[in-house]
Length: 330
Image (cartoon, rainbow, N blue to C red):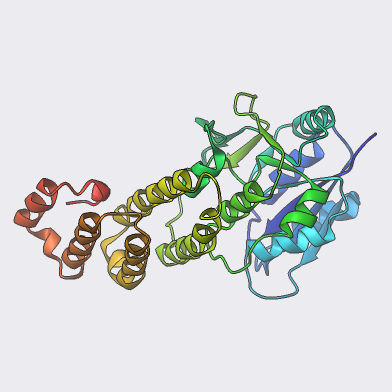
């Protein structure tokens, strides 16, 4: 009656944070867990820190990534392979669990034994340690549609998985994805026939996300977006709610441009061919209008030739109704 929980943690150069993360696991009121940490080739003292903990507590296990490609996705998959628990969750090496996290999650799963997974609430904290008011698990009328629109309903630490469901139905993360690995994984889970899950957005947060202000890699984001669309668009065409799914995917277009237009001009220029590929995908599958396609093409033309610096072009773009490009600094 004391199920084992496997906590999967990819590790890469987080020597300044990993002790705090491990301490948050050691502080759990529920003692039946294993922490499976998989190193991605750290060059700092991260592994030495983890080894010191592992020597004192056999529940902490450190492995090294033993195959390509490099990245957190492969490390999570290795962690899944090494895990022995009844339930499984993912915890990044700079995030934290609150003390009753595991206890409450196990209680919930024991009350709802029909669940393949449950989703709990997570808050966020800033580099100076202040807790943000932002909650990362959100309520949506349809969680699949939210994911298809890239309105991400929860973070990677929020789901608590029945390990049998995860290993037999999902078989790990798709290692082709340089970005959007979590949305791909969660979308695939929701597409499993007869999946049973429950989301608890109104529960108190039981874990916390460390906010790091990093420059996003647009190239990888665009590659991941293209793979995501190519993977799931054909799948949802077979569903009874195909029209609603397609409407959701069409909203992904606006989210892509929100990302693109808030990026540095040089990043946009370098990635124009990839952006054009995505524009073509949305047009060819009738997810955007020809008008929106032409507006996007004109926007990229302006970026390529620095025409956005002209007040005339700024005035023209605004009056043409370039709603997708609100984020760009005209």
